Length: 334
Image (tube, rainbow, N blue to C red; front, side):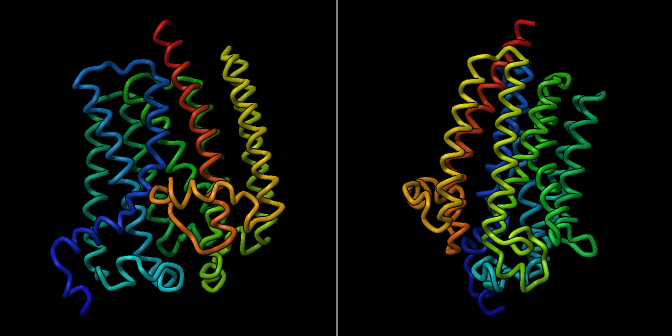
């Protein structure tokens, strides 16, 4: 309490912003952008730009921010072990202040979803409103008892995949057009990619998870086996994505996807052979390049994962956006 009382107004605002974890907002943006691009229906007008901004705010700072603030509230004991510098365990925010933070962003996110749903109307509007409701429910049950989905990887990973990747693709697509069949496939692939990455992201909290009785895959089967499971999912996603691009007639993109797969397999082999320094040549990309965007870590396996994440995400993101753009162009000419 003494720390909280001594904070300036600026420091307090900074603490409120930090509990929303702005770094995590970025994770939903590519999915939203892809859904919009694949619609092929957005026009360069102020009206459509405002709609785009609304859906980005709804899922990003507000929706994702809510998931992070509520997680900090219910994970206070774990954060005292894993992340003692977070706003609540460090004393910069009281639990009551954190609750007010989460309530405000929850109401704003839900309100935006309801407004967009009513404004768009019909099935498309229902998809948008339902998407944010599902995301907010999963965000709460992920951390809150008695559900606490994060206690087991079999419930935590799918929850993240649905909230961050699946509904975001569909909602952004529905904002400007009927749901494209290709977008459903893209949403499914991104759902599984999110699962694969959240499995590896649990490396950072393995110590606290074990002490708290949480069943992350790392706790259950160990780091090296966790790498194998995640790598298998990632490689299958690249293969299926390449096959889909072939069936959609996006032949040049098939070669980009398969090239990305080969590069990924190289990184995976290096990482699995030596988790602590196997891809240390990517160290600078994390510490000096993308460090502020994806975070830092003192856990060897998680530090290696962050290095791999940069390469994998760039490869997957580029292919996602190229495919979404090509799909959108097809419908523009349709």
